[in-house]
Length: 233
Image (tube, rainbow, N blue to C red; front, side):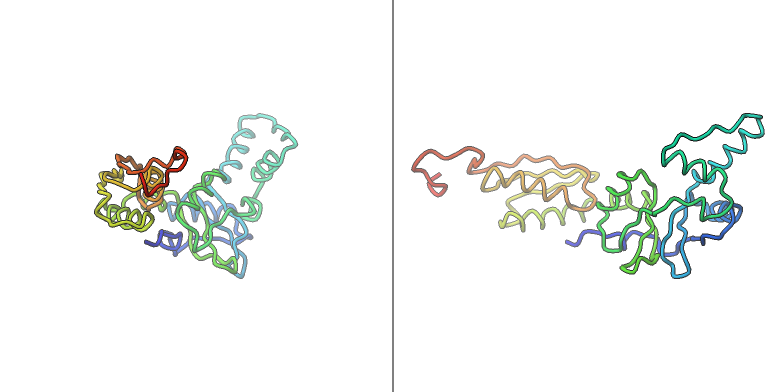
């Protein structure tokens, strides 16, 4: 089974903008296409940065303070504070965008992309080709579609992958799937094989959780008595 890659789930038609686009142009693109963020590209379609609604709201918040007669606060000398202050004054995409952009590559797995999003606390990833050019965009919603796979498709993949990993006939491990939750029943040769079966099942796209009730002939978690070989057990 081939794990799904970013290329399988991404959106290929990407709303993007250039670094010289005005604040109003960017806001209009977000509103028109009902999206919460977009990439900024150069003339060669290479991704320079990403603009989100939060970036635009920095300016809105600053303007609200001025209307209420509040004195602008001097930002603390941290990178994030300086960036926020700059965005509050920004009038173009070049100064609104967050850079460098956190991106994904076409052949990355869905799991890798999910980890990248979590690590960087972002909701979307521009997808780039090997030359760094924009090829698509993937959102959290796109990644979650993996969990919409039919249970029967998941069951077949788990059954085949477990049998292959354990080098044993498929009928020895019974696989059932309900709502993405996998249950493994049957028999394996060694106790460690049960753990391997669970690990393999968890890696199948669309699996939510795995439980097992697998019997085993040999408990290889404990050392064998002196003079006894596995073949004599």
